[in-house]
Amino acid sequence: MLAYVINPGSTSTKLALAEIERGDNPALPSLLRLKLDKTEVMHSALLSGPLELGDLQADLMTAATDWPKPDAVVAACGLIGNLQAGAYRVTPELAEWLLTHPHGEYTSNVGAALALHLAESRGVPAYVVDPPDVDELRPEARVSGLAGVERLSRLHTLNARLVARRAAHEQGLRFQDARVVVAHLGGSISVSAFEGAKIIDTTGARLDEGPFTPSRAGTLPIRALLDVAYSRPRSDAEKLLLSGAGFLGLTGTADLRELERREKTESRVKLAADAFAYQVAKNIGAYSAALSARPHAVAITGGIARWESVVNRIERQIGWIAPLTVLPGDLELEALAEGMGRVLLGLETAQDWTPPGAASAADSV
Ligand SMILES: Nc1ncnc2c1ncn2[C@@H]1O[C@H](COP(=O)(O)OP(=O)(O)O)[C@@H](O)[C@H]1O
Ligand SMILES: CCCC(=O)OP(=O)(O)O
Image (tube, rainbow, N blue to C red):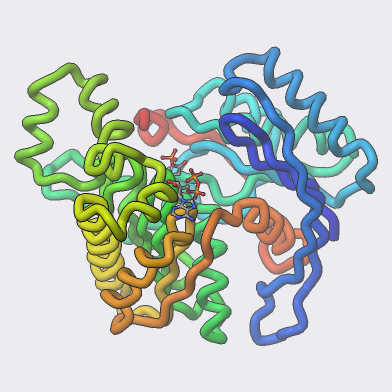
């Protein structure tokens, strides 16, 4: 099977021609064989209007000019309304909805429109896979200690699901039979518990919960949060918590490659790295406890999984919980291709999207 795969980012859109075949292990049918021919289309600014979208559609058409006709086109997308994981058929209504109801700055809001354009030009269907607001939380995970405040499911769904599936396969288990905890450690962080192939609980990302990140605060003691909130306007408080905190606030830089070099000689940097590994490990422990029994695997992924001494510290701390799988970087193109492949190969059924009710579409970040 062939698919065009589109992953829009803030400064470039990644594109791939994916060849997807069944694997040769009948016990693990979703362990697929993938071949990706990747390319990247640069754009100068955050996509914000129809003009830039038109230009990008044209650039993608050019990049794919010589590619053979695919069976489908698949893209990453923004928030589409608290649904089950999997593939959704892109309709003009879904593409338009994402462009006109962008809740938060999700650059992937343009994904569905890009996929539809390319798919129509080839006379094939378009899909989006595993949006960030896939919501499969167990009921008790939604409840916070303050009536009216509901915990949300907003995470790095694409990468985290692929990594959870690979960690399950590494243990010789089908995804639906495995319990896995995944820590996605990039510029943005989420830690999530997978059981029965569902994301039953997650820290969320951005202004939700979890470890601190290169520039975000993560979970704070409530009294400190109140001090931050009451000492400045809300927009300044958000700016501090999202882009002036974390490693940046603790060490003066959010460039973790630089911190990796400095940690041997600077005690402040070493303490920040120790604290980060400790917070990640504690969250892995908490999300292990969200499962019905001990996890079969713990996995860490994202760019920070390249920081060897941090990975070692995390492993020392959580090694007693389950074997650790480390898959550094992000594998979103692979995740999109596999998600599409499962539909094209008849392992999963694509779903139809309907606009979420006013109640579930309300929030911002
Ligand atoms: N070799 C490395 N050592 C330490 N940190 C790294 C390394 N490579 C990347 N990082 C960090 O990973 C983060 C980027 O994560 P990544 O998942 O690749 O991208 P994104 O920014 O999209 O989340 C950055 O904070 C970067 O400093
Ligand atoms: C909502 C989780 C995925 C994501 O895109 O996070 P950031 O926008 O915080 O990087």
